[in-house]
Length: 225
Image (cartoon, rainbow, N blue to C red; front, side, top):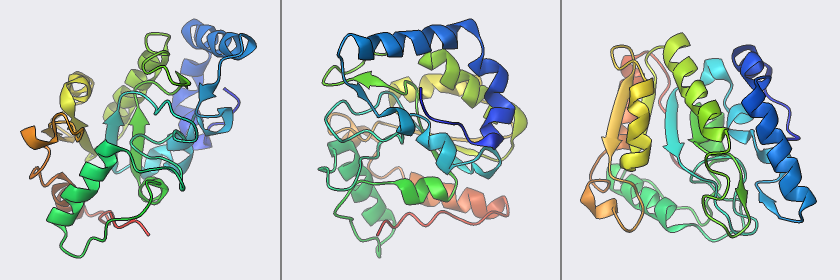
């Protein structure tokens, strides 16, 4: 965990980072590297979601489960891949849905969602690292405890946020959210295995913007250049 954390998040998460389970997680990650395993994303990118979207700037939260485990894909933002890398199937389906919701949306030729993050979309995975080519290999090592705390503190300290919970795993996190002061939108996961079971036609991107406008906030420009 080589990355520094944005000061706004450090104020919220500082004590959590010092807890024994986080120290154990750090030791585990060091051990992985000492054993010769490649870990994604690189250390400087692990907290990218936080550093592009400061705590007090969060408007929308899109929850993923695990970083991509292929070379050059993961860079610390859920569903996002670096430029020059093939757009993953789930993100392709997100683009298809956006094109349905916004007739002038042009499907990008890359999958870098940094522009969303910079506008206040927290692209948060439940697990923030993974061993190369081994999906889920860093689950149940402490990351979920940490990211559950992130969701809880967003719920406790902020109001009027929009949480997009796609698929059963993300929807389990609703228990951490005070739905009396936040907006929770649920649908199937955009994966090709489930997108036709309710992700397509969910209208979540447009609905999120409508909620933001009602909250007196600037809507997200979902178009990616």
